[in-house]
Amino acid sequence: MTSNTMIGTGFLWCLLSGVIWASDGTDGVLTQLYADDLTAVQAGEKIYRMHCAACHGQYLEGQPDWRKRDENGYLPAPPHDASGHTWHHSDDLLFEITKYGPSVVINDTAYKTLMPVYNGILSDDDIVAVLSYIKNSWPAEERAWQESVNGTQVDGIQELPKKKSTFLDKLLK
Ligand code: HEC
Image (cartoon, helix red, strand yellow):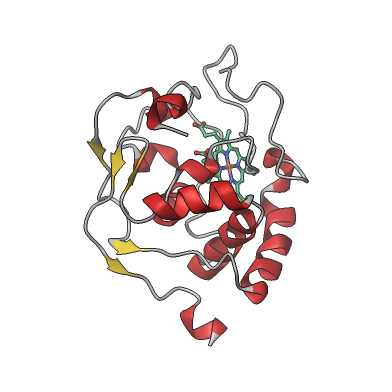
């Protein structure tokens, strides 16, 4: 898959041409997911069911017509399985979208979205776990592609230089 085929998926920054810098209104650390760690993935599945499945679907399938904004300008919840484009984003960006919300990540407070902000609702470890569960579901090809861009830039969003986070590190040792 080339970056050209990914532009056109109809999602916020996919529509932007050229590279923009990710907002620094976030945490300044590079978060990594633990998609091959069973403890993290199992914990993440429970969190997913409780907090995400209502919108993103029991089977990560998302809502119908998820590429089309409704009459009020809101996008439906996209799938998190390989048919969506969650896997187009780096670990760190997924963490920041979930913790701070899309509008902070793209630096546009006017951006209309129904995606909740999980800062203060889920702990950092819980967010890493739920995203590890999602990442665990991707087939090998999508996993390999996502790893190849992890920590660099995806869909035109350049990550700021950061030091690696230690979320979940202690728990999984
Ligand atoms: C109230 C419905 C709702 C709930 C609950 C919800 N989301 Fe979302 N989510 C959305 C919508 C709508 C979007 C599309 C973002 C936009 O408006 O641009 C989205 C987008 C996302 C994205 C970006 C996906 C991409 O392809 O770029 C991630 C990551 C995400 N959600 C993770 C989660 C996680 C993890 C949970 C549970 C902890 C969760 N969401 C719970 C509605 C929801």
